Length: 313
Image (tube, rainbow, N blue to C red; front, side, top):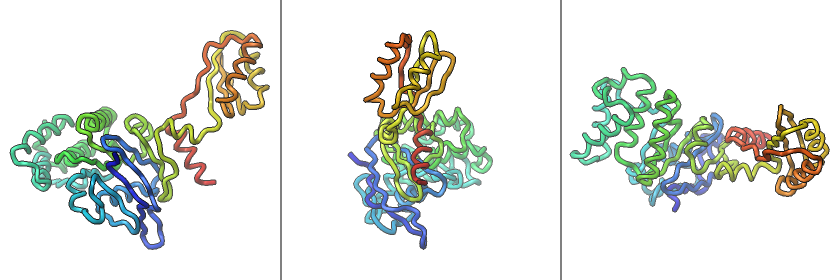
């Protein structure tokens, strides 16, 4: 079931089309990643979904609520961590006071506030800093505190803009673990803007690539790889004469390129579904001893760069 559904969502700033007829469906309890270069429209998308901005055209559903018709209801079920999340805190108030203040704004029941604050601060390893003023915390700790604030009222949907950008590797890992556990345990839905391709690849069920306000592709990493690549790379590892293997491979009309290692070849093959078996037969008939013939997995970075390069053509 779609928890976030955009329908031709668009935003103009004068003549600039910041977002142009974007259609996205994010399933309940999933983690969705929106990727794109600076200025692609990622933050604009988040601001529209959180009702900070009104669309110029189109609309979106957050849960069962329309962002135009029911903005107050949308805000009740949504937690937001903007890119500069630490700027949403009050620097002269302590970490605990900040969360207590926002818990009251979110109408968290009074009897639940202390336990919820302690649980979040403890998980983020901030409990020992609860009496420190937010303005005196490090950038990373302020970002973690801002994430606690976004989670206080147990929202159904979390909109996170670069959630680990200011965190050290250990803290970033804890945030990734938190996102995955909340999505699984409570069915919370996460919509993440990120430049961190490896992070998105680790935690997101589906991704979309946005550029110049338009969605170029959407799907899982494996689905995008299938859409993008008629040519794929394969590692062929052998025991024996590597030069003989290189000669056999290079002579095939469907082989685009060959890179030779000590005991392996990295081969780019057109339409591998049709041509791999032929290549294997020719190698075996030539007396080449094959110990591995495997696809070289495309990383999310490969896909991202390939999509953006295609958009420039």
